[in-house]
Image (cartoon, rainbow, N blue to C red):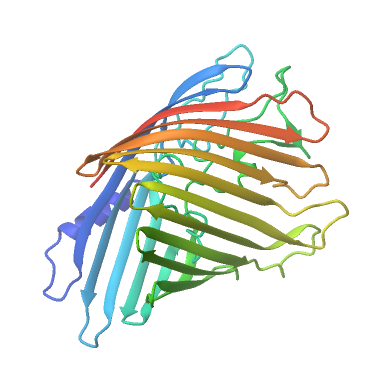
Length: 370
C-alpha cells in the first residue's frame, strides 16, 4: 500500500470524533545511518535506513467500553528507501560496488484491532507473531545498535573469495542474512489472531495462529532481585508442514534469550535459536545460532561488545557457518533523540570454499522518535 495509506489515516484522525470514539495517539520514528563496508574486494559507503528500528508512522488508540473491556486499534506504516539489511553490492563490471538507492514506498506494516480485559488481550489483523521478541530480550547497554539482529546492517551483502568470486551454495549466493536465520532486526509480520496473557508475578505468555496454519507460542519472565534485574523469554514456532512432501522441510523453530543487569550499569545477554527439519537427507544438520553480549551503561552513554556463531542455514550436507564480532556505543540525547556507532566483522566458513573474505561493517546512526 503506497501513499494513499497515510492520506487516509491522517484524514480519519482529522475528522471530528464522536463522544465515544477511541482516543488516538500519533507516534513515529525516523532512523537513518551512514554505513561503510569492506567486503575484501571493495570499500564502499552508502546512506541507509537503520533496520534495527525502521522509519515508520503510526496511530494507536484505545477506549474503555461499558462492559468493562477495552477496545484498541493499531495502524502503522513503514518507509525504507535503502534498507540496511537488504542492500547488496552492485556487480556490474567496471562500475562502483556501491548499492544504488531504491525508491521509498510508504506501505502498511501493522493493521490490527483488539479487545482486552484484566486477564489478557485478543488481537486480529496484520501484526507480529507471538514469539517475535523471544531472541531480543536484552537489558545490556547500547541495545539500539549492538544486539542479536546481527544482519540488521549489511545482511544482504554477498561474501566473496579473494579472487572476487561470489560464494554460492546450491546456486544461492551466501549472505549474512541467511546465516542469521532471517534475524535481520524486524519482527515476523503476518495476518493472524493473537492472544497476550496478563502478567502474573513477572510471567506472561502469547499465542498466535497465522494465516496458512502456522502456530507460534512464547513464555516470558522478568523480575528484580536486589541489585539485579532479569529478563527472559522462550518461544517456539509450529510450522504447517502438511502442504509439502519435500525433504528437509522445516517443521518448527525454537528461540530464547536471557539477560541480566546490575545497578552499577553492567549487563550481559545470551540468545539461542534453532530450526527443526523433517525428512532430513543424509548428512544434513539443522540450523542453529548462538549469541552473547556484555555492556556497560553510565549516564546517557552505553558501550557493548558481542560475539555470535550461526551454523548451516541452508538444508545441505555442506558444513558452513558464520562468526560475528562487534563493538558499539550509543548515547541518549533526550526527547526521543539518540545516536550510535557500530563496528561489526562477519566471517564465513564454507566447506570446500577457500579464501573467503570477511565483511567489515562501519555505521554511524541517528534516531528521532516522537
